[in-house]
Each structure stands twice: as C-alpha cells, then as structure tokens.
Image 1: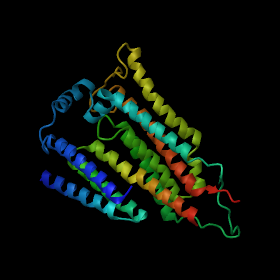
Image 2: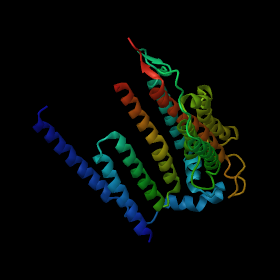
Image 3: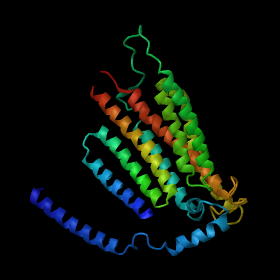
Image 4: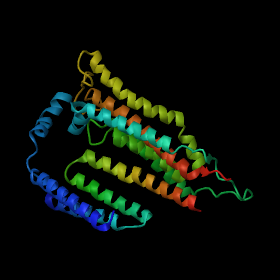
Length: 252
Length: 80
C-alpha cells in the first residue's frame, strides 16, 4: 500500500472518529453536574437496604454482583492464560544459574534491607487483610486487598533471593487459592437459589451497619474475591519471576 | 477549593500521560508511568472515587511495574 493510500485511509478514519466522538462528547452531562437518578437512589437506599457504609461495595457485590462474577472469571482466565504462555517451552530449561565461582559465597543482604523487608512484608499482609475485611465499611475490598496481600511476596523477594521466595509461593496453594476464590463466588451466589430467591441475592443476616459483620453476603464475597486475587497475582508474580530467574534457552 | 484540586489533578494526569508517550526508553517509561498512575489516583480521589483510586494505586504501583520490570530484565538477560 502506498503512502498516499495509507494517508487517505487515515484521513477517512480520523474524520469518522472525530464526528462520532464529537457527537458523543456533546451529549455528555456537563462536568460536575447533578448525579443521575439511579446513583441518587442507590446513595439513598443502599445503607438502609444492605446495612453497608460503602455504597460502591453494595453496587459491585450486590446490586451488580453478577458483573463482578464475570470480572472474577476474566481475571481467572487471564492468570491461566499467562501460566500457559510463560511455561518453559520445549527449547527451554528450568534450572538455577550455574555457580561459576563456588569458592566465593554471595554476600547476604544488609541487615537494614532485611529489617525493612520483614517490617514492610508484615505491614502489607496486615493492610491487605484490613482492606479485604473492611470492604463494606470503607473504600477498598477484595480486589485491592488481594493485590496488597500478593505484593508481600515481592517484598520477600526484594529482601532476600529467589530460593527463599520460592518457599513462600508453593504453586498448589496459590492455584488452590485462585480457584477456591473464583468458585466460592459462585457458591455464595447459589446460597440465594437455596433460600428460594434469585442467584446472588443477599440472603445472609445483614448485621448492624458500620460494624465489621454487616452487609450480609457482601463481606463474604469480598473475602472470596480477596482469596482469588491474592492467589492470582501471586501466580502472576511467580511466573514472571521464573522467566527472569530460572528459565533459560537450552544450550545446544 | 475542590475545583482547584481537580484542576491540578487533571493537568497532572494530562502532562504526565503525555510524558509517558514521549519517553522512548522502556525502563524510564516504567518510572514515568508510575508517576502518571499516581496522578490518576490523585484525580480519582479528588473526584471522591475512593474505591477506584485504591484500585489504581494497587495496579499502578504493584502489578504494572512488576510485569514491565521483570519483562525488561528477561529481555536483557536473553540478549547477553
């Protein structure tokens, strides 16, 4: 295709995009204008109906819980896809690099780095658990908390080395966490059917708004999502780390 | 007051977003992208979207840098 034809195609595409985008943008409500009726209604009703103080949680895990179910499975398939993609291929081997100077030992990380890793790692685990369990009360929830939990693994790697971090990421446990989390969402949804209501209805006792045990199925769903995301992101981290640290092209 | 904060956040996101595109070295780009992510998180927070801001922070500070930096390390190691 010559440069002139390409430019012509580009011109047509840009013009079409500009027109449709322009029409779309012109129809948007102005910046900072009144929120929609649906949003206003949820702000009004969510706390009374679902006993939660974070309305966003009520929307993502209850009113629109089915959307989050699909997002869970998008993440699950993404993680599965990455595991398949990053496996050792037939012309690659999986082994630790050879020690070319066995008479010299690798200096251990300085005590300051080690201390920081211990401190930061435990702090991250604590923050992760806090974020997962307080989803119905404050901003945050299963997804955010799950990623924070998985990030504790990176800190272990930064503070030590590959051999140590491998002990912290047993593949069966991470995969079980990922799978249990994803299926747990479905099972909690089935509770609704068992109770004679529709799938994913909030059938568990709602508790007192503003306390840790409130919101019925919302904190339970946050918990399973946290489990899935923490496992998924830990798998992601270990797959990428393996690629960098131990997977090599086979020497011919 | 809140308009000023939102304006700062919007300008920050626009400027750093452009900077990400204009940075050509992938390693430096990862750092600039982190700064862009921080701007986005600040923008969401200034618009009172706390949940989205938290998601942006965990993705921008943990997931993306990890994938980018480890991929760069892998590519460089293979070239040696």
